[in-house]
Image (cartoon, rainbow, N blue to C red):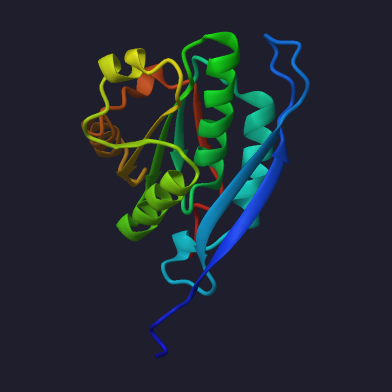
Length: 182
């Protein structure tokens, strides 16, 4: 029984700042997440840094047209929040949504993130397989993809990122919180 760790639901609400390109009043963003009461894996915990990073990202990252890479996405607070906000922005302004690639070194964490995406009404593409054609065709929903990736290794890490279908030169933002441990 010691190896069995229970799951719980975590709920978060955020106020979306007004979009720069719109005069619409701020909207509320709600996320419901499946998280571990006590990890492992560590990426299945509900870390406060993910919420703080989402608040910064919602303020500073355009909700349309950006290309975001998140390192250590864990349960998906930041990636899923950006995806939901981007979907709203794309519908309101008829713009191309922000593309988000959520990465983690732990496949169990990414599997949980994908389950959280589904429970929040967000479609996920597992990379490799995300193509520019798919992104261009997706005008009313966020483009969220996931993949196992570790930033360690210099040029080798860049090549592994490319194998996930991500061109590092096209990224507009790279996000990460609670990604370094000893």
